[in-house]
Image (tube, rainbow over all chains, first blue to last red):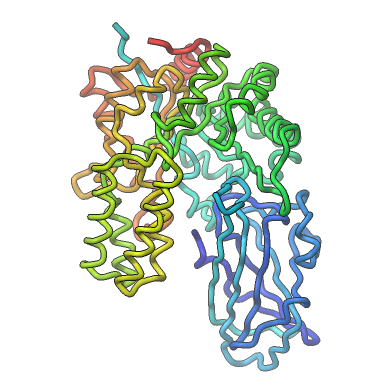
Amino acid sequence: MIADRIIEQGTLITQDGRTAVEVRIPWYRALPGSSIAGAALTVDGVSAPEGSLRWTMNNRTFSFEELVDETGEWWFPLDSAVLSGDLAVPDSQIEHEVRVDLKLYIPYIITDHGVLHIEEHDTKTMKVAQR
Amino acid sequence: MTSLGTPIQGVTLYSFTRAFHGRQYDLDGLIRKVADEGFGPGLEVIGFSSLRGFPDRIDDNFVGQFRDLVAEVDLVPTSLAVNVDTGIRRHRLMNHDELVEYMRKQIEVAAKLGFPIARVQISLTPDAMESLLPVAEKYGVTLALEVHADQHGAHERVLALRDRYEKLNSPLLGFTADWGATVTGFAPSLLEAYRRRGASEELLGQVVDLWNGFHVDGPPNTQKVHGERFGAFIGLAARNGRPDLGIDFAINGTGLFGPAPLDTWLEIMPWVRHVHGKFFGIDETGEEPSVPVRSLVRQLVENGYSGAISSEYEGWHWNNWQDPFDIIRGEQAVQRSAAANAGSAMITDASEARRILNSHLAQPVRG
């Protein structure tokens, strides 16, 4: 829907082997944590291991397993969430290709195949900030 | 004979999703912009889009600020769009009691913020609507279930709701008619967006032909036919070497551009409490090329409709090269012209809108 805005330009940071980027919701309305079904974080073609991914929104950090039952915290359309994972991005001087994949459930659209899910992705190029 | 209706002009903030999401306007700024532009007096908001913390964390402080702002800029809250998030839990759908409570909380917020209508959605069955009637009565909020493509006014699910409404005979149960159910062409601005993504003229011609065929055949009356049409768009894209566009063709071709005839609205007209003036663009002649806005406004006027029409611009999904505010301005000019041609007028004065809306919602409009 608004996939070109998923990655916030200039927000790539790395520290001690973990890398994070800010992400915006590619949808017109807020979704609860339980609707955030999965993500991938890839920098220069290397993806963070799935189990190392964490999702931070509203000042709380979740694993994707923890998001499954999270119906109290919502991703609001104006807010950036933070997607982080185990990934070393050493060089702070060159441009890096950052890709984020998102899988979201749309909880009010029930199809013959279950709750509708959408898969969106965005790729942007930016430098990394070392922390 | 039914006296002519005087629909109330208005807009849903959904039309400006791209500007709001892009942080060009916050909620306060966007409401002021709507008022300054004269896009009201009717104001519709989607709870989960515009209101942070909706519905559980809407406190009295926010309620007071919202009401003060709306009063200051002299807009008239018409409908709060609420959602039936049946699939909010990963492993099962909501049960009946959970659904009623989920909706109750949103309807309560609608009442607190001063919205006389809560727009609800098609996944609510006649039984669910009957269960929600006491909630509507408690808060004095009309529940207007949205009839949206791929359904339409004569769809069996909609008629089942209508029949239950008739039995329950409450002025608080009705419909929101979304003009996207009765579209007459594949939106040219979406074709332009596909063109910008490299789609060939030949492929786009086939997309238009496929949709026009569905328009001739009429709307899908079963899920099976709907699914077949969905698949036909995907197949067409694949055959033309653009499988990446298939889902997009299918979602828009079946879910946004409903091919039902205009007269399907007559099946539910007496229960229409609110209208989404869904449209996709304004062309160089100042007209909407794929939604018959003039005929739809005339139909409402001639059937005595005096509720609000929220202009609902949906072209923002793909149109990132035109200003949505210019486009809304153009569409509302068409609505006003159409109402005048039908011998009536759109209501643009806030005081008059409040009086007329109160009257429209106080009793069923049954001919």
